[in-house]
Structures are given as structure tokens and as C-alpha cells.
Length: 232
Image (cartoon, rainbow, N blue to C red; front, side, top):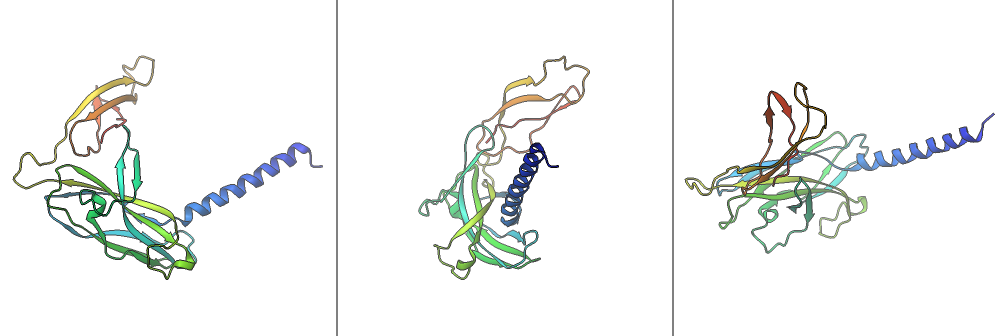
């Protein structure tokens, strides 16, 4: 005999499984790309023949067409949040306009891997700092796959972030440097932390340089503590 409780749990299970299946389907439809982040360094020179790899998606059964384009990236807040936007094509100081995609639309067959080449061209008036940009990969709707124009229907967009450190040779005032200031330091636990291992600490670090600071770590009395970075 099926009770109301059992029937209710069965309905919940079916609904949850159905929603999970839809969610997985959405995830698996998005493009699989590598790398998800670039860290490039250049002394006021162009960087040609950069590569973005697009893989066939898991369980892909038909060719998928993707449109690739540069996109603007801006850091917001104290953590690692980013916002993405369409760059103004007339602004040569926006790093998104430094990126030229060689093949801006490709088709990936099941089990196939495609390399998309792109170039980076710096303007003569580029500043000495870390610039942010991105490369957006969007799936083109199947009924528009043959259309290479700008009005194609796209969805499931993924973005590879591009970090560009610009320097100048033989110019001491225009070279990569870090200027970090510890603003806050505290333990996340109220119990005595001495003679205990793996105690996590919360830190607030101000990055006062114009360059991105990466992989910040520290040690305290032989006890590892993880940094919660709040830098550019």
C-alpha cells in the first residue's frame, strides 16, 4: 500500500531528478575551452599566434558552431569579481580592442578539438600596468550556423580572461612590481591558536601597484595560513 508520505517523497524525487537533468543538459551544452585565463607579459611589442582551444562537449552528437569575439573585462569590488561588456571600438586604450581573432567562427565536430588563433597588438600609447580583456565563445543557434554576420543568435557563452602586463625595456619606471600592504589580520577561530596546526586566518591586503598580484601566500610560526586575496 502506498501512503501519502511515500507518494509525496516519490513526487519530490521525480521533480528533483527532472530539474537536475535539465541543469546538467544546460551545463554540458556550453563550450569547453582552454585556457580559462591568460597571463601575458610584453615589452610594448605585439604577441602573435596566441591559441584558444575549443573541445567537443561531453556526449556531443552533432557538429556545433561557435562564434568567438573579444570582450571587455573590468574588475569591481575588493575581491575577484569581474564584469563583462561590449568594448567601444574607437577606444584604443581598451585591451579588448587589442585582440584580433583570426577565425571568429568555427565548427567543432563530435570528438574534435579546434585551435583558434588570435593576435595581440599594443597601441603606442599603452600604459605600464595590468590590462584586462576577454575572449567570449558562444554557441551559434543551428538555424543561423551558416550566417557569419553580426546578428546571429548565440547562447551558452563562456569567457577566457586575458591579463596583460605591459612593460618597457630599459625603463625602470615602467616594469612589473608588487607593492602590497597588510591592512587586516585576524584568526577565524576564537579558541587559542598556538600549538594547533592548519589554523585559517583572514587577511586584507591592499595592492598599491598598477599590476595584478598573483599567488599570494604566507607562513606564520610554521603554520600555513591561506590568504583571502583582495587585490587588483
